[in-house]
Image (cartoon, rainbow, N blue to C red):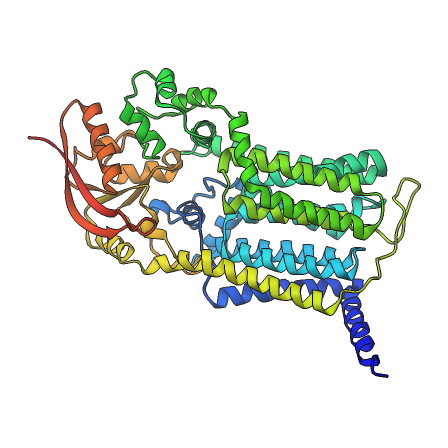
Length: 579
């Protein structure tokens, strides 16, 4: 009798998990489970845009506030199939933070799908509970570290999970609501950031081989063809919209050329000068400090030629991907545990997923290097794909359909379940403490307050921010950012926005002809620049070399220590020709 309570406790725990995994309840449980952390984070006001200024620029374009240009229907880093619906929502209710809500909504939808697929899968309780705990940690991190790069991965991955749920191992039959929902998520994620979407698709590519070799069902193959076709339609629509919208005609070519040149390790100065001999050593430093804003020096044609010299697939670049070895190890161990847990012949498919993850990580790191917004979604994609591996219908249909297997019945020991909960809370709390909290704290920096005050108090001055625009954006809550009014006298440089319609209309309002903004600095007394001293000297030398006259820089105001690097102050400078 003494052992009876222990047995009852174990049976009760397993029974409760079994109830949650019933098909009629798994969907509701999944949606409720993923809503809770997102709502709590929003209530605590901690979803922060970490990739400043890209995230803020995306939202400003969507809402029509960037450079005060009004509704554009286009965004610089998302295709028209995403930007047009978001812009339409802003036109309807401009005070609602639709862009941030869209990101949060896609996070909820993506993890709800992952939870549902995990609960419905045939993995045992001892692996199901750790998987759910891992999904919770990934969801919390993705919400705290709110970036369109991560969300695009998640949406595409979740969409593929829905499509594969009926197509990978079974005869899917006719169209189903889950197919439509899955393809909608793929379209949303790919349109949000095409590069992330393609990388997510690559991780799931082994399933295409599996369908062609093992399943060989026409309905499954047709679903794969439709997904690829939808991606192609989105890509075509995005390029067509850029090339045929007034003010945006040259943007797509400029962006592609610029990324091919600058999204990789810097070339030696001599190599850049071999492409364009007229560039000085200082010009090259201006380029790689992302201070370019003058088309006459750094135009599309220059970037196209420079990109041809960049080593895109060099072994030295690929070696840097080994820094993400923890990612490989984590996903590899999970794949091993899943294959052992299922006890069936899907080891080759699991190995293919891990290999594609390795290849995807290596290629992505060539562009983004090893950063959180790359590593986090790669882990999530590995988990999403491997969870799909454990799926399959319990009713095999057709002679080519994979045979069904019963769900593993081993329970999850209570200590293991408790450890998973504690570990998920520890990882989530640690990420908030070490990453999200310091980012949020930047908004209270005296330098940021001083920069915003200077812009507001000097509306008659055009304030140019040379890769220092994070002072206006840093630490802002993603939902609260919608309430910030973009100043009429603020111009950020050092991005790809200088070939868009809002940029051209802004320069026209300030009477700047052409697209050589920097060279206007010593010409006009109503222009100042917010820079660190090193970048000020780069700009001053650049202006002297290209004008043939000595240019001086005087300090208008010391704004204080930089928010990201407190060891260096940030100043407002005015440039003028020496008398």
